[in-house]
Length: 334
Image (tube, rainbow, N blue to C red; front, side, top):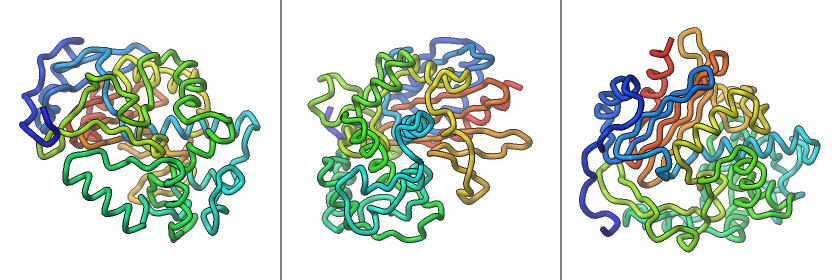
């Protein structure tokens, strides 16, 4: 099947916890989800799973939920004294001009003033062309990423402005300081520690198996797999429901490194607060800590109700908005 062709099949057959299936299936259909979806609900550290056309070891692209992992690596390095929150980017990476003075904490909290993506016209044309052809738009290597950073205009520093460019630089800086490639750093300090054996951050198509799963755009077009090279810290992880359940449980029970990343510290607008990548919202009288993600053909969300030791993970190989579904599942568990 070529990228951009055909349309997704209907929502796959359901397996797993019958109660969770009954609760989420109508929500998934209403959201336009199709093909493969996995939902994990954790309450008091006990996971319940509902899979549609999928299994516990089905691989999904988790998109920007990867940012939460990068933020944990950063917070862990700060907590251990390996790095300082106010470390300047230019002391770790070969960047010049205004971006060199941006701090790692500003990058982690989207307050660096960097744009969402590169502002260079050549990069914008390349991304647009790839998107129109249902191809992976993120192919920049580290050298190109640093050139994009040097050319970037910094506007509104210290105010929240979401930046994939900023998180990519953060992850590359932490990895450079450790003397590792970003996927190696993630494997050693997070995946290995938590037993996430099926999770990875492939940098190029050469790092994928021949049968690597792909997904569907919101318009129902088949998409190429995304392996986003130097932008991997901002959205390059592939994971499974089982591994993401391990991740969520470690975030709730304190087993994950760098948990200070979750603490809300700054205003992010529209009622959101942001820590290191993680958002915190008031939902009624409750506090929900979360991050969502999307690639060309996948969508994801991880939402935590930390005071109740509850979490919801939703992974799908269709692009759709999952936030309300996750909040509903958390709320209905009361």
